[in-house]
Image 1 (cartoon, rainbow, N blue to C red):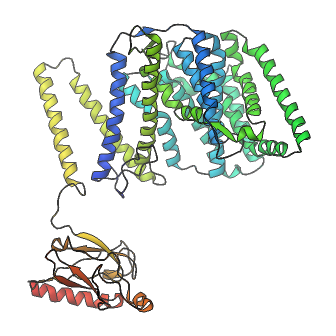
Image 2: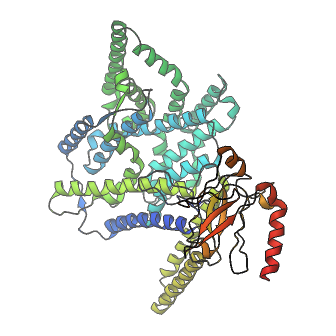
Length: 613
């Protein structure tokens, strides 16, 4: 779909960022390999959802199991404490750890039907949305990168897997409400920072923008002016899967619970230097003063947290939802203070929770089909009659698939959306959309109910022929896909582009690979004069042993000698290098000096053409 360097085009197996996709055999192989793995996971989720090995089981309420597993998680996390790379406030490893333990409890809440912790789950979702504002504001403020590639990469990360699940299972976007929620608040943060970007570094300009957005949020969500219906009425009020009261109402419910969280995260990020300075200065105080400051601070945070717990957390579900957008950030800020009160607490993180936190999005999405089923309403069963063993086995399979989906999402993002090349990104996305559209069209044809069996068979054969011949045509045109007799092996050498003088009365020319726009004319090869060049050997010299580098004449004179063929055992003329043919006979490779190349090469080519012709 996009040309480019195909070296290292295959994605790293360990999850590192892959190289940009190239229209080469290696690039197509890498893409096919990643999509085949992703397809296997999607197929497995489809089988578990629609053709299960055993009938799905109903959820069972078990708070003892919930708290036992939560305690086991924190005990195991204590044994995986590692020193962090940074000791800053809310560094990356700490926030991933934070997301890890929240996600674990969020998943258990669904699996064990633990309605007693509903209010805590609402606070955790508030923390996720708060981190969206905090993290993206910090990125845009520090990096000042508002490129289209950055936006496309973020949207890919948030929506690639959910788009596949929607296609495979026929579900709606609102069913996986976390994805549209984070996508909306990411775009809101981007607009705040992108519009009037020159004000981002001013003292009052950025604050004025945040206050303006906060005022708009107040008018949309906290007043009865009907602005919400005006802005989002296009989503529709028809009941759908995931929105039984209509998509518009479901979207209002989900966004209203946390409509201030992103703005508060942006405010915290804007005042991050002041907060960090407070924690650093308190940690640098003498021991008695430090103990007093930290003790008073912790006591105050615990007191505020206790007040919030008694007055708000203990409310029933519906009354609590009305207060979550305004009071849940109180618990969030208390946690941040207590987690970072001491410098030693900022210096360590749990590796186990960190790993869980990296796959938060994937574990949330796949729980609907690989851990739970029927869109998170029933349980997947692989070991019938043994619920505890089944829970253990299903959890291992589910988490392994989630980690692989995370790796595949990042690997494919590196292929389709390389940094700094928006044209290639758009071209790749158009090609991907065309392939998906063709697949959907073929699926629509094959599922037409009014077609007879013979017509279905003809359609399958036609599609198979088109796909088969198209694949062969593409593979035939890929570099390196077939043997080309006219291709030459390249070697690297110093000096000007050489001319290979063969035997038998006809000279064979080794043409230099000229760089586009080179100012050196015929002799201006890849790296210019006196540097390493790409040289080509004809097929008869394909197995010749040639030294990898030959010194240019000024270097030879300074070094007092020449670099001969490996194992030659004798010195040679400055402008020659030994070439050993497959039969063992030695020939000499003439290397004209760079300054002679302009006219010398042309005369030699004319002479050889006349001699050959």
